[in-house]
Length: 307
Image (tube, rainbow, N blue to C red):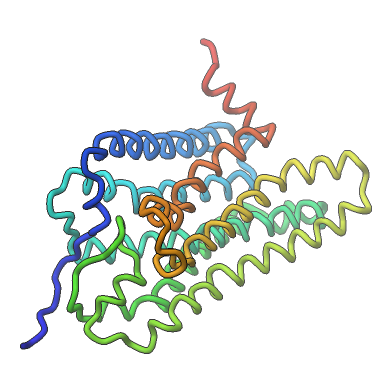
């Protein structure tokens, strides 16, 4: 018999939701709205308060935009599938979700790299900071972050768009590229190196640049006054926490729980790979909002300003 190419995928993991679909829907909707509100408030605060029109806060605003983008790539599909009977998603929508998720992942690491570079210049070369980190250069950095993220995705996963599929059952709640590749009629050689290439380009390289920046900052801080050390710790701690959280999330995403431990509950197997898209979008605004004094003060002025 001739193999028939699939034109849509079925997200089979929703089959176990059952009567829990209503509380799941409310929890997911609440979390998604909370992420959008928290990040939007931070973006608006930075835009409205001219005292925050500095490179570090402009880069933070871009990071918040990426958190909303990453969340929008996942949560609307989760919500729409909760009350679907077939749990089908068309090929274009599946590819679009995968594209947005991986571009956002790359943009997350690249944005944190740009922010680490900004802190390196501010702490290690303070007298040249205004010259090096001017408005035009910050704009170029943000543009490069998105161009690099888009190109790294195309170089790593564009071959998937040309695959023919002979199966359509994805045992997950979203379009996971590894599961999609397994459904292809013939697995191309690129599939074995695509994730490795993406990891090296979009995760390993930015992570190394971030590490180098903070090692140099640490070296300079050892020779400065206690006050300068405290200031450096205040501004750098949120970024260090974000990078650490991303590293943990990448570990969870890379583990194949179905092979590692079949006895792991389905809920854990599904939720842990999505750890980054659950925690990171909410961690970013709260870490920066509550830890950076200028933003905390600006938020209070915007939200509680009396006429």
